[in-house]
Image 1: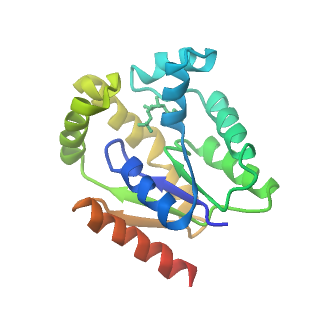
Image 2: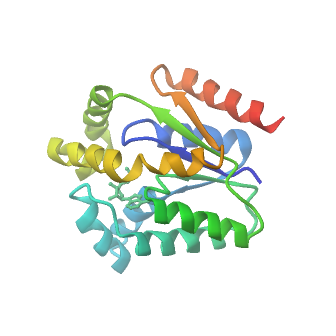
Image 3: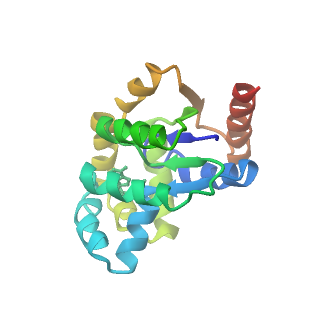
Length: 192
Ligand code: AMP
């Protein structure tokens, strides 16, 4: 199986690049943010709970997020591999993911981190707000909070994968096509 953690701050291009990756490698795309948003749209109990955190740019608690992610993975026994987009965002989430994949007889192949500096992230998120309809893209204070939460709670997750020699950084500045080919080259050179 090819199991990729696509990592990076909000606005780095994880969602966009995930679309390219699932097509190229026939992977199942699991975006925890998308799953939460679908739950909000359907007014589920999980959605109601997640919304209060998301609207403020805070992380949804680990236990809830981990249980949801586990259910999604177990729901796809036919998968050739997964792209985890927006997960793990904390060390306990990374540990839970390792344990789950281990139970399934597989593991994370690599973490690919899209690197984009903060000024560019803010420009991209402001632009995305015009089309995404996401409340958390529209408010500069919430954007700042999401970036701060990323730096404080999520960026350290890199170390977890560095210790396993699975961490790879990609320059996330350039055209969408350029960044896609950087990622494809990285994956292909790691598989052969
Ligand atoms: P995203 O679509 O990845 O930008 O996520 C949007 C929001 O959903 C985040 O700001 C968090 O509030 C929540 N969220 C998504 N993934 C996670 C996660 N792995 N852990 C905790 N909260 C998450």
